[in-house]
Amino acid sequence: MFEPDEELIGRVVRQLRRPVTVDAGLDARVMEQVRRLPPRRAGGAAHATWGWLTRPRTVPFLPLGALAVAAVFVAVVLWRPDRPSRPASMSEFGFVVVAPRATTVSLVGDFNDWDAARTPMQRVRKDESVWTAVIPLTPGRYRYAFLVDGVRWLADPAAPAARDDEYGAPSSVVTVGGS
Amino acid sequence: MGIDRVGTSDVEAVRRVLGGDTDAYATLVARYRDRLARYAVHMLGNREDAEEALQDAFVRAYRSLERCDDAARFGAWLYGILVNRCRTTGARAAKRGRVFVRDEAALNGVAHASAAEQTEGEDVVRWALARLTPEYREAFLLKHVEDLEYEEMARLTGASVSALKMRVKRAREQLQAILREAEHV
Amino acid sequence: MTLLLAATLAALQAAQGPDPRLERLDSISRPIVTALVDSARAVALPTEPLVQRALEGATKRATADRIVAAVRRLAVDLGHARDALGATASPTELTAAAAALRAGAPPATLTELRRIRREPLTVPLAVLTDLVASGVPVDSAAAAVLSLAAKARDADLVEFRRAVERDIALGAPPASATAAAAAFAAAAVQVNAGAKQQRPGRP
Image (cartoon, rainbow over all chains, first blue to last red; front, side, top):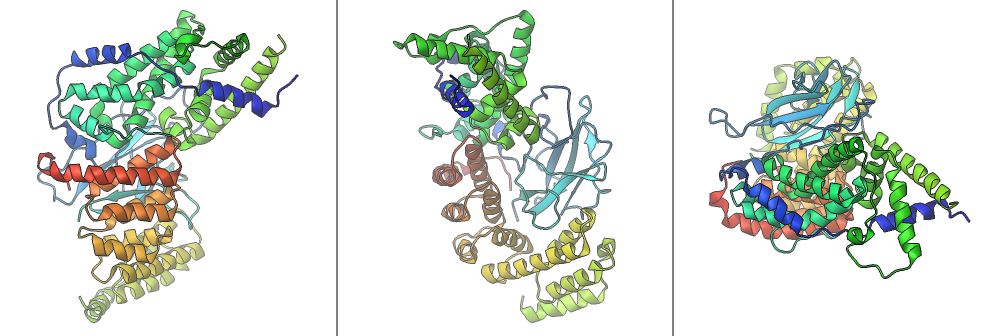
């Protein structure tokens, strides 16, 4: 007798969702390994509250397939906190996108007149598919997007989406605090 | 979905660890251990590999904690590390020719006084899951068991939303086919 | 700055000639957008957001009517933002406020924000807008931001927004994720206020 397909999947999911417990021996093993590492200096917390940064990301599962959406980011620290010489109200922001088959990628937004020539992105060494750019930003709210090969628009999936009623191409928003 | 807010918050624990308080990390390990274990066990099919991946993920997260740009999203960030570890562990295990091992008592953590049918059902599900292509299994677990939204899955896995939707769909189709076939045996 | 003085200054600026960046626009939208920008300047509304919105359209190869409609809508939103926030609002605050209004925030929310928060409103308004973009109902987002805006620093508000997004990603309903994160952030704000001296400098 066949179960309706949805019920079949439902049964599978219900079983898989049951809680799994791990014995606390794992905790002990983790902490033991962790304690053997060189101790941290205090002050690392400064880095935890930087602006709107991208996140550490994974190596793709397969050789990269279709360039559909910029979705993966390499855990590369691309920027520094404000240097003393820089005016206090400016901060540097790093933008990262994966575009494996792109020839060119530009960062365009409210901060550079949406001029595709202004902020070309660079490939990160070793990983041919990751592009980055670092720009200084004064406080404000900026719409932006990535322009691939001059024709294809990518929003930044790691950033809040910009509302787009108007131009039919996706954008993202970065907000810089301060005054 | 209960995100534990009692006691030390993630943000507070991360801050302490970054400030040099190694012991504070134990709070985070205890907090996320079981939740992440469920994914690892189902993804890898056996407890031993799962615990190895889990332990590895926790240690890596500790070492690269500065790169967790947002302490309030520590859980999701840790999740991403685990998904990656499971891929590596899974690939290694496949090379060694491991198969999914039945271990229902340890998996469920509760002694089952239940009927043989239930045990059989669980075995069949695990067996069916094992026969899925790994990337389909990953997407299926993240979506239907871990309840992630596609945008978050895209961030964790590096695949596009449309590719993930296709993988989940294929996973469902494959599971249905495998389970229907199993019902005939 | 009185409106009269601002209008005089605007007239002086206009006398210097149109913004050369607008030359990137097509021949149909350029004169209309130029006129919209001049009108905004004449009433002391910020013009830079309007120019950027037009340039965005140009780069995205939008049709002239879409560019004009977008710039016009933003100009109207900026005017409403100034009505809600008052004439002392900075251009950055007005831009963020315009986006919040466009996302559905009631003007009364903006006015209340102005009343309770001494620091710039840019980040709270941005957080409100971004939460709505993540699927949080606008009333929940507004209530949460209002509950935090008096005491929370910009960084606290950003953390709060990310906490909500994380919880939504892990399956929580947006409204309850927002309420829970706001309650939690309120407690964290107290802790941060006490620990301020130990924090490294950061705007």
